[in-house]
Amino acid sequence: YRTGIRRQVDRPRTTRCHRLIGKLLTLTPKSHAPTSEKRLEIAQSDIQINGLAQRANSILERMELCSPMALDWKRSRRPLQKPKSNNSIEGDNIEHPAPDNSNVVDPVEKSERLLSILMEPPSKTYLQLHDNNDPFHQYQYPKHLENTKHESPAPTRKIYTMVLLSFAKESGPIHVAQQAEDVVWSMIVRANQLLKLDQLLEISERSDNIEQLALENLNPSAEHWNCVLQCWSISTDRDRGFHAYSFLMSWLEWNKRCEAGECSSKVSAPDMTSYHSVLWACLQESRASDGNDKIEDARAREMGSGVAIRLWRGVEKSNLSLDAASYTLFLRAICQTSELPSKSSSCKALVALARVFRRCCDDGMVSLDVLEIVRDATTESQLKKLVGKNVTLVDEGGTALPTANMLFRLPAEWTVNT
Image 1 (cartoon, rainbow, N blue to C red):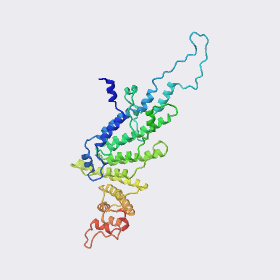
Image 2 (image 1 turned 135 degrees about the vertical axis):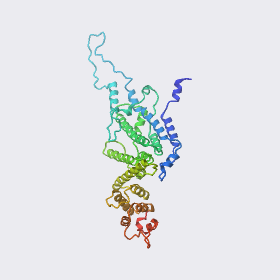
Image 3 (image 1 turned 30 degrees about the vertical axis):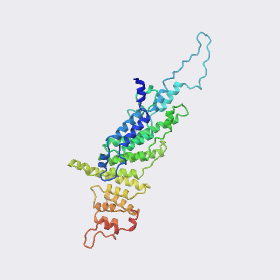
């Protein structure tokens, strides 16, 4: 038995970590977060093992701590010693002039300069990506790895993608989705590190491993951002709608910074999957059993309605094309507030409902679900203003018509695309 050989065999490498995270991903549900009324129960019962995403994230964190980027530059400082300069030869009384070394770069000084550039703290964003008390957190690693002769495991884009896909399918408390957010910001931080290595390419030699990492694009795409939003949509936290909307706004602000030239990341704009995930996070199912839980559920529904209203204002300014499912989600999220139906015409939820329904009519997306939501959230006079005076709401005996009968009485252009 030889300890050295055993350690070489059991040594964690990038390929082994990749296979292990991929195995964890295979134990998750096949599809992403389900979009149904009982999505939380389905997500929790379909997962065979709880905490798979957190296990994969733990492996990823260890790989980031063993980052070969900082290790290679740390190793480049050690082997070279600064030579002593002797202006005179021993045993000779004649002093010889020192050679002109103005064009020769001292290797120790060069290594110190490269390391100082790499270790320079990155510019802080509004999200405070780095801890104020520990600005070099991303460069920490176990000290015994400094003297190792083997390649350290380094996270790749595929590994980041697999970890985020596992988070997109796992429901849990607030810290689960927060860990998913940290994975995206870690990709951005690591991409900035690779950018610095590209800047050092002309003034230093790099190992093959470093050059391969520098050529890899670790900037998050829309798929990575959407995985975090999907994780928030199935979170068990009551404030998940607010947190999902905050992360979406962080995404948009990061795109603005990239467009302004503050970073080299490629801009990936949110799509309808992003907005659907935020809307599902805004919806609050009533699962309360006692008085305190009912109060918390009511507060969460009010917050979700307010978030949906602000989200709709952003959609109006964009060029996104909505479908019938999008209008249904918007109306459900807005109308879950206790303020509706309201007799006050200045109610924010009522005003937002009218604007969503009007655009839905213009796009020809009025469906039976849309009409039922609007009918339940408005009074008879308000509904008549929305659908028009020519649409009858009651029969000859004064009985309210079923919603399906009302749908056939609407103008044909309102339902042409459903």
